[in-house]
Length: 127
Image (cartoon, rainbow, N blue to C red; front, side, top):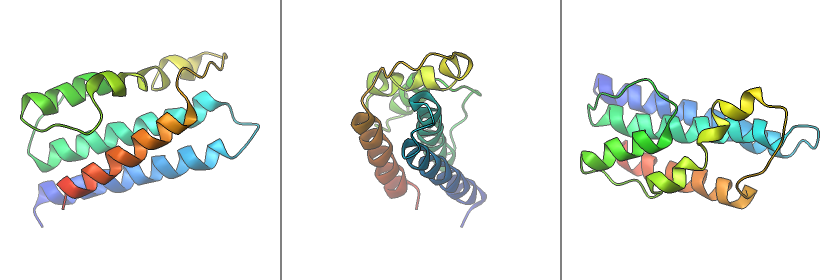
């Protein structure tokens, strides 16, 4: 393995950890939806970055899934979820972490599907 593929694999593992946290927190009725979705957003962010690392791409430090996915597309790599779809997770990265309201802007099933779809794709790309 190359250093880039090793680092990409590390990001996949970190993404899996966040996905597990997302799923685990969803099962706890005392945990707000926005807190669980923070980990879904983090998982998808790390999956996008794993693919970028694997392809030797440079990216700025950002939590903006739209800009990360758009950068991949600009380099000829198309994620299975569009930048517009991924944007729906963006508020969970920062905004809702510091807000005490719990407004589900996106159905749980949509978030779960997004995390699963992005993980399958990243796993196929990063080998």
